[in-house]
Image (cartoon, rainbow, N blue to C red; front, side, top):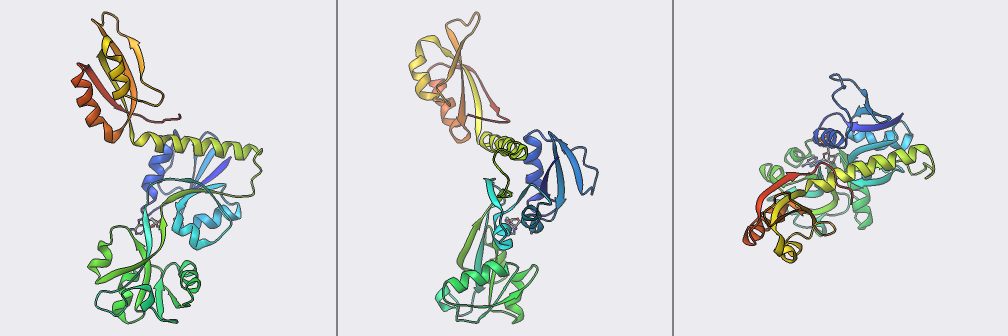
Length: 287
Ligand code: AMP
């Protein structure tokens, strides 16, 4: 059985479960609050804190894990980045009080107190810039710290920046960009059965991610306009064109289209006399 560590709560939990479900794993069998579940295809999910996942993967308690790139960097353990998942996007940023004297990194003097729940990354970031700081570890809600006089500067996760703003803070620099990742152990031999199964898993997840921004478009097009159809519907390898029985001079053209292009493609197809246009979501796409 291959063990996959999945965040049990927080903002990565729901998108991680949805992704696994779309890739064909069965998460219905999970009874509420169960810490482990058999999710099919030889995989068991371990539901644990996102922050612990790099450690569990490095230790071999789990074979693979889904967690934030920020947490992987903070754990600083030997794990391999297998796939970028495109959700949980945020950045780890240096922030200071809006009306304070810190406007850029150069305003931060050596040994200033910096509050963060990312002590390893923070210490390294400032040390690499020749400005070692005194890290004040907090487990969350770092935004309040500058107002309590505990530290003037914080390093915290930001996505839109609105939480900083509401708390009278401004962003001074980006330490790290982050998104959810699939991580694995670097020491699994490539010809190992586990390694093969993990390859199948990442290919399945990737196929779901690839399909997310694509649509399958079908249209009946006039037989004589195939050159224009090829221009309008490039598809993955050109459109698939099939006969329509009693099609009355029409052929059916099918193609995968970028989600953002659907609007324009429909207008162009209408312009050449297409009929019966259908657009549908794609569950998985493996080119
Ligand atoms: P949490 O919801 O606090 O358990 O956060 C878990 C992970 O979600 C973080 O470590 C990040 O990888 C990710 N994340 C994405 N956006 C944000 C954000 N705006 N604030 C905090 N975490 C975020």
